[in-house]
Image (cartoon, rainbow, N blue to C red; front, side):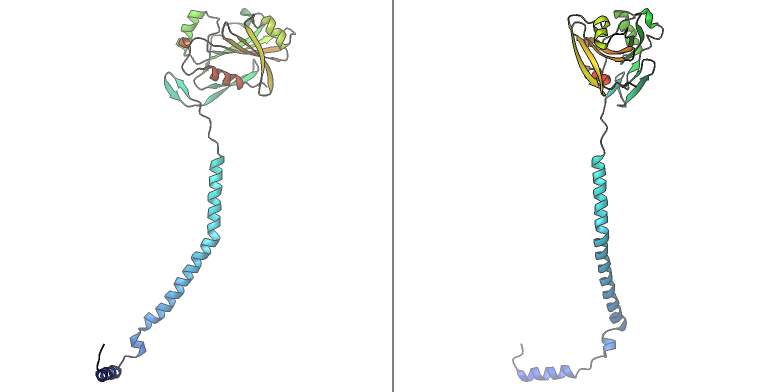
Length: 251
């Protein structure tokens, strides 16, 4: 700060006497006009962004919520692992329909229908037997080897067999007692499969699990035998056999 007021007065007077350029030269015209337009543009852009946020934002949020709910409601198919010759295959089940015997059933992808009954007339097995089909997870060679041990007409352990028999005018329980092969070791019960009542029998001595239902003048019998672990095909369990039984549909 200058201590001498006289010098300060002289300096201020000299500064005031200096000539200044006109306003047009002090502030260039394009700068002044452009500044006004730039300010207006910024304000317009800001208003536009606010409108977009208010109008479009809720719509985008609602769309995202719909997508999230749609994905949450979409169920994942249940995985059913199957193995063919030690190689994992598609975990799908095959729908098998047998119009001759009058049923349909779902089987694992690596199961197949055995051909061993195709050349055997049913009456040559039992006079009242109308037809028989067997489903197995064994390969043809494995099945042939097992039949060599048990006999050509045997029901093999861990296979699933479907049969149609003449009822001979008997109800399901009467037929079961007369022809079902149940002895003192059998436990008789009942179950419901897809709204249809079945009689059941379990033979503790042989391991036979059977399910019976009367359809018109026929008795349909579905059965499997629980064998030893040594002859159990890969991937076949009691649960898998029961799942197949529970998939039975009757027209």
